[in-house]
Length: 183
Image (cartoon, rainbow, N blue to C red; front, side, top):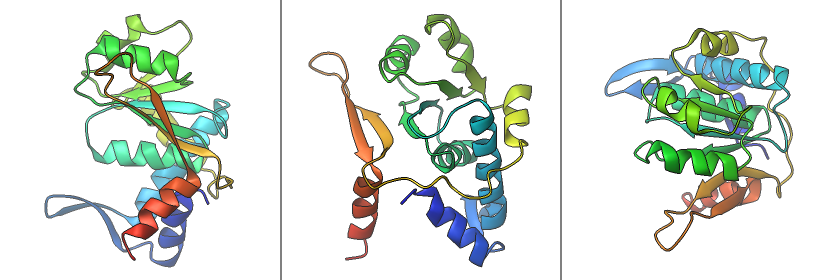
């Protein structure tokens, strides 16, 4: 099952329930969170990004990170999270190796990263007009159905003994990991 389906179900049942906080301050309820993720997914789908695509996140922890992550999943694509503390050269290598179709980056990460990437890989800064347009795209009504074996996350190792290696996690891996917390 697509992990964004969990967000969709919660937003459908309890849209007003608090979802995202910064400290004690509520930033979004489930309806708004899911709406933003669905719009990002719609924007990604309009770019031809969906099942079988990889999308990189070179961002610090933020509300935008969560919205983008769930938007990627909602569109059926796999997220490639990149540690925001890595040097831009290391991030560029991971982006190229993962065959990411698009990169989401913070305002501080985007400018030095862009010239290091292979031609044709767009970088969207989370405070750009292009990003805002993506976030207001016509939303996908539901998360794209995925099979248990579909890749949903592509993590990279630290690369302490050589180049980092991609570690593929499937929908089934993520579901098993999540459910293990309740057993």
